[in-house]
Image (cartoon, rainbow, N blue to C red):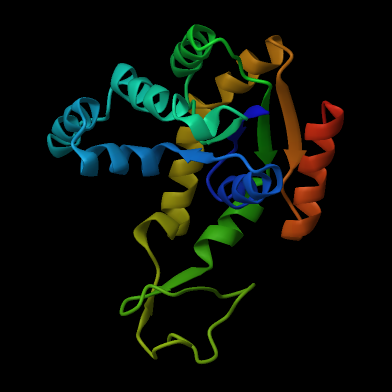
Length: 219
């Protein structure tokens, strides 16, 4: 099984990709993680990426797809893989398709985990993180035992800039501009499946499993 998980920030695609990977025994490939790994290992592409990032620029598609391709060629990807949040644009999708074709494989499914804007804002804007130990909480779903204080070490809790409501709305707007055309791209190729991401984690997982096993266009 080879698939990509898409969806707006806060839809839960990272959590669900991890659960699917554990279920099927295949690796989950997060572009952020493999980018950091390539830079730590000082690979040629990793060093190229570092140069762009240190200059404050986005990593170009050709460098990013090269790093993804290096990861996909590892033996643990032979039974399949799950891409978490990649590709993000139509040019990246074209490059990914060409890379997979050169490897003698292709993408089986493109799953979009969907959630209403207000639900995403509620999920992200309610997150709080301990400044001391990094433990995370949620004001609604996993509140700290004492307001403003970490239940693990007693440190001060704060809200990340990325989780402020105005920033969340801006991130959602950027997603719609850059990534939504990708849905049409995969729909035209018969690969798109849209799954409702609202509800308990296990319930959403069951919807995803139904889509993967049955190929239903919507769950």
